[in-house]
Length: 420
Image (cartoon, rainbow, N blue to C red):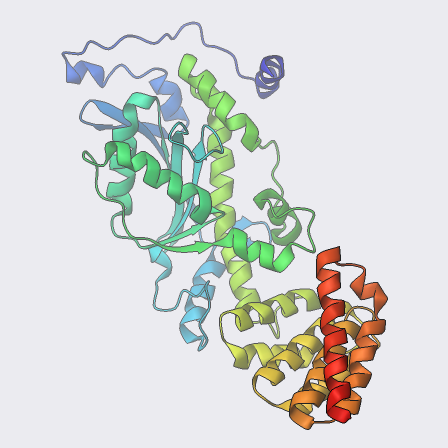
């Protein structure tokens, strides 16, 4: 691994700068301390400046982009547009920015020394993209050493203030819990953590594309969905190793690639939020394939917005394709919940004979005929059709398979008694 890292450094053109060395700072003179930052000129050429808090400093880099800057398929102005469209949307949704301004959103990411959630894992970079009236900014806070955590969190939390909405990629499970963990060590010296609202785009991406993409990693979603491909990117697994080397030899050359990687992450969060929001807000006219439309409908149904989900299922339902049949089954299930037995039965029966849904649809038809229509002979007929669907049954584990078979036999016996 060490040899591999050394080869990577040579490939990246990283060379130790012999002429600059780390100078031990005298503990007694703060004004002199602030002049002795290793490779400070190189940091400034990289548009990164030291920012002090008492006797500690953090390195802060800020970049600005015009709203018409293109990042893959989209420019940043589209995010402003979708936030405006959310204000007019009458249905609730987990990604809804209703009653929020685009300036309230922080597209947030971290870089850490590992992927574990323990206290030994350190965040060495915090950063976010944000909107102003006529530009998009990216602000990054870099930890120059473990002794500077107070400065890192002081400046980050002072800058974000009361802004209340994070947009992340797996931030609910990883990034923000990591921030909370590290904050406990310095909480007496820095501002409190704000109570953020949270849009986690990893969960949305998995819902939309887990069956369509080889992986839902952000880099894959960027390339396949957003049309943005990283060139000469520093891979995530290299970031901790490069940071540890930086701690031994604090030249910014080691970590420039990490800054660029992180910047792409937060900018992609903006365009991904735009894309996902457009899918949800304009599902009937946006360039979605049928699988994506079906997943949007399922999402609406899962949060209780039955009116819009039913409308989408009705447009997609049919027989002959997996999406059409899945939509038909979902549509029939919604009708059943509404106690619209006649239409539900019609929809379920249309799926009897299909490869994937014969068993499920036949069972539902049998239940409706038994409990609602009281036609026990037809109920038996559909139960026997389900029993005959061996291909569906054998795809389940033995315990599940035995339960399904037993339920059918019990139902048939019960129905036969009712007839007699």
